Amino acid sequence: MHVLLGLALGAIYILLAAGLTIVYGLLDVVNFAHGVFYMLGAYAVFLVISLTGSFWIGLASAAIITGLIGALAEVFLLRPLYEKHQLYPLLLTFGFSVAVPDLMKVVFGLIGKTVDYPEALSGFILLGNIPFPKYRLFIIVLTAVVMTSLWLFLKKSDLGMVMRAATLNSRMVEALGIDVSGIWTVGFSIGVGLAALGGAVAAPMVSASPDMGVEITVESFVVVVLGGLGSLAGAVTGGLIIGQVVSFVSLFAGQYSKVAIFIVMFIVLLVRPRGLFGEAGRH
Amino acid sequence: MEDKLENPYSMKNVWAILLVLAPMPLVLSTPLATEILIYAIFAMGFNLALGHTGILSFGHAAYFGLGCYITGMALRYLELGVFPALLLGTVAAGLAALALAALAVKRQGVYFAMISLAFSQMLYFLALSPLKGLTGGEDGLKFIPKLAIEFPVTMDLSRPWSAYWFTLLFFALALFAMRQVLNSPMGRLLPAVRENEARVKSLGFPSHALKIMSMAISGLFCGLAGGLLTVYLGYVPLSTLHWFTSGSIMMMTILGGMQSFSGPIVGVLVFLCLQDVTGNFTERWELFSGTLFMALILLFPQGVAGSIKERFQHRMTPTIPERQA
Image (cartoon, rainbow over all chains, first blue to last red; front, side):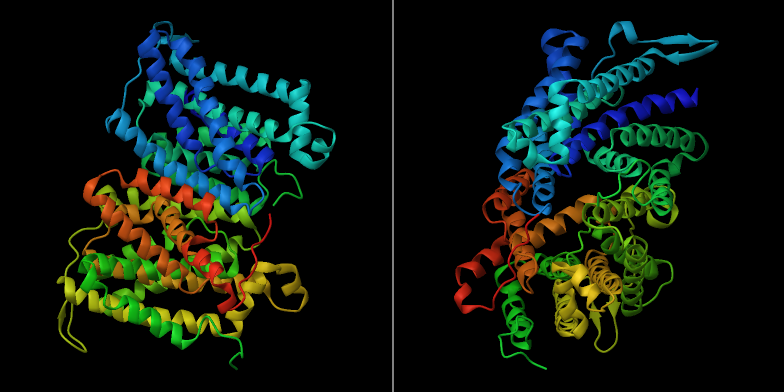
């Protein structure tokens, strides 16, 4: 039971960490605004549901709308900074993560917006003889599907291959006549789209509020660092581990659940400084 | 030995900064002036790591917050005087920075930023709930008694004016101490570590030890700033440990201009005054400051002080050219 609950929690971490790791791997940008996109995803699902009444349309459009916002942010805010030190994009995204939640407070007010569970997924399902919330099971399945398609996209599709090549050597890719800056925009939108999907999926459980992204940004960093910066397999493993840690520590010593995340990270880094799947040669 | 070149860390500059800042309460409100001095110490300490040594730390809230809490707890539970409590807070923060740096010194750049971030968040969550009994959890540490000193003069520090003079004294000490650090042989090596660590190492200097020392000293400054905040506020808000505090001090430092002696101080001054002014007509100053900050990063990546400096560069000492990624 708790393994499954941890798996559902881990699934959301996986979505966030995968987005973060794609953005880092491709653009070399540590996106401090990742949690903001998670929050925007939750608001997008709230808005679209109140317009259309459908959770499914809401879920799909949340990722797409926020992905487009991400594309705009990449073109207008990040692109001018690529030539400079790695510090500048990091600082810019921090400024973004200060300003945007405040903007949301102006637009939507301080109080969170609740999102209802879709009817088909409310209630429990019997696994063996244990009742398990249907919605959590849905999260696990959805993440598995999304991650598999992401993996297939990166490994098998032409665009995915170009993206991986650009991660390794963007100049070479450019020399082959491919528009690398377009690839970066696409990569950034996919990254923040994944964060937004995480937020949209989490919305019925936590309700959309302006500050919901603040803590999750740091936690998704932990997941990524734990797994190894820039590694998709690392993001998945890190997400699974942190999900289980939070789930079990909350069971036995609730107060320590957040602290435990960081302790696990420290232990892993002391034993394996590059993270579990970190490649040699990266920082 | 003094350089023939104009030294940015000369005593002249220390006095100039003091001369400009000391009369602040005549123009600004006294509490705002006190806060500016406190955050200026914090930013100076932070800049020793980021600007001078090139250590990208995103966890300096840990040392600031630790200074706040240890000073506060020493005052409240141990019933120490203000000076010993401040000393305790400062030393505790310095030791924490030393410990973290010793553990993580081999990690570079973004990795170090994330590890230091994780360290500060760990302290934040410890203060939030497992140690709630000691720290007051979400409400912060309240009911700190005895904010008065008797020696060398009797002062009730809960009065704005006395708090200001008390803070100014420590600010002057910190400024002088920072000048000494930067002027010392060790301090002179820090920019070299920032620019080319491999070369520093190959010249036979212990670059890791230099970085650890820089972090520890930086922690001392942040701890002192934190302790002074506790004395000034009379309580410790939990937000002092939050990662947004790390980001804010980074914002202020970059705004003013890193790698410079007065830059962080200018940044704090500009930032807190802006926050005060915008706070008068809107509650949403974060929206304002975040947007402003993004604009500054895009338009003046060298910061306010750095950009002004650049304009008058022919009259100033040569600045270190910006590193390329």
